[in-house]
Image (cartoon, rainbow, N blue to C red; front, side, top):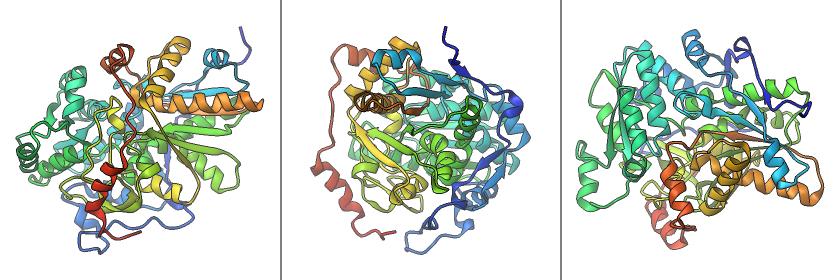
Length: 454
């Protein structure tokens, strides 16, 4: 047995007590959100959607923000999460690279999403909110918020993208088990949902549509607010507990990564693993940081950097981000959590400054990578996570070809035990790659041609 550990663990008292806010260290200030009139919005403009304590975090530029003790207590049910050395994957690849993965699948909901769901449920309850509405793509976020609301003591309603609702019935059951309502989006319970169904009765739905429905319901009641699992600054903030723990774990074995990799849809798990390392890069550390996304929804790699709305009905402010256009309906790939038209403003911003790289990958390569991971490491990854694995394998193969002993850190953002229909479809030969046609992209971007530029 190797003398180098397979798992690098932290004690509960080593869990970070503060989140890291990258806004304190950005080379330039993040562009402000704008109203539809093109003018910067005020904090009170967001108050029908979010509680003021969340809005304060969204706008904060303080480097360190204290994690409330009740939030830390709930997070300690599964945190600190283990850092694994993927020795069997390394052997299968014949690579001199050392591959490490931060296992966020150990949470009760099976992904990184509860890191922010618990915090958001807590801050809403402290503000006096009784109900939260939200959207979910693959169901990871909806499951996490359903669990967190039950643990914190408030109610939850989830609009789930229709194609994922059909593909992943057990996610719906998970949410109901934790006491949440879960309905397919678009639905007939909101005005925007009814409008879209009348125009496109067979639509697979999108995160942009589901967000519109959730916000429409939230703004109609004083005791209700909306909760988002990705994209926004406070979500990125809460997820940095991942990278902060990883840095402590690498200190225990006296090493440091050369490459940090995460999949990216809205940006939350990627920000969580990467932002604490981007802090080091800003301060002179030499490393590469890579975001990976589906070639069917290539937001960072093909979407322009523009001001765009986060939802189809344009109920959100205009955010400076890489976007495929707020009306973009992604193809029905199985990595439902990566089917979002926009990217977190903070992730988009660090890409603009060259602090990270971005790459898009075909889904068959990602499923092959996921199978190799399952065959060597045992864990079955979520389809979203498979994009990070595929990029990691590319980097490990490159290290072999170059004969370089690189250290690679990957965020293993969640397990795929609720996503087995996708595996079945892939192994049955029913899945094909879908590079987004430029014609469809240009059609979608036509709706934002008059939006302001950051």
